[in-house]
Image (cartoon, rainbow, N blue to C red):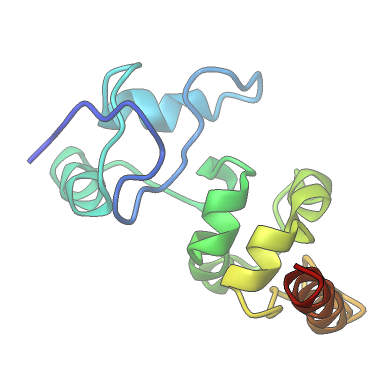
Length: 134
C-alpha cells in the first residue's frame, strides 16, 4: 500500500534522489513515486518490479539513513566499482548514529583503513562516561 509519509522514518525506507540532484538521479524516483511521496521498502520494490525501473547504487541518496539501514551495503554488493559520489558517502559514514547502527562495520569503500570500529568504540566509551557522570 502506498502512503504519503511526512518523514523519513518509514519502516525500511530507502532514500533515492528526489529531484534535488543535478546528475539525473531524480529520474529513478520520478518513475517510482510522486515528488512528495515516500514509499516503504515493500511498496518501492513492488513499483520497481511493476514499472521495470533499474535501481543501482548511483540511485541512492548519500544520507545516514541509507548507511545505517544497510542500503548502501546491499547495492554495493551488486556494483563493481564505488559510486562516483563516494566522497559524499564518506563524509557521513562516520556519523555516530551510523556507526552505532552498523556496529562500526562499514563497507570497504567507505572505510578503506578499517578505522570505523575504533571510532564507534570511542564514541561508546564517551557515552558511557557521560552516563556515569550524571
